Image (cartoon, rainbow, N blue to C red):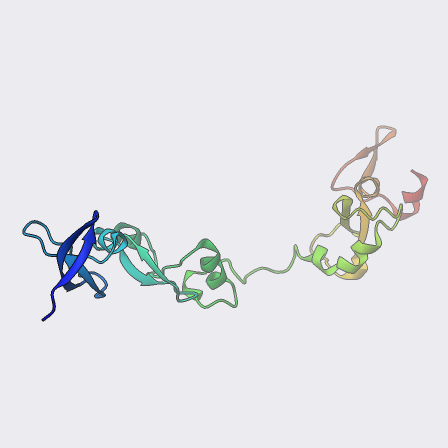
Length: 189
């Protein structure tokens, strides 16, 4: 059998073939009476001394490493590579209904009225025609926030919305969120 040699610090040294004790890859190591290398690289050496356990992300299947103490923190026994993966799996149409909070999917749609008025919002305020979207609000004409029919909704800017909630008290008009200004008086302000 032919003798193997490696160059170490510019000196030719006797070597032997050895399989990495972590990854199993074959490498050449110096024959030494002292400590012989067990691992093919620093990475394998570090990984071998680490106590982390390999698990797969429940959502995407990516292999991840977690310490035993972190694995104990999982309430349901599912592990994720990132917060985004967890949130994706947790969605109503996601892979993991077991981790979904109890309130998911129980909404009445009461607060989605702005979403239903997207096209009207692009047109702007119905009174003053302001089209700056962040200034626009969706107002319930009858004041009932549970009545989200399109016929009961209108798009107004902040100023025009304030006009829709004026209340006549002590001889003057004041803003009051629970008041609805009579429609015939709106254009007099």
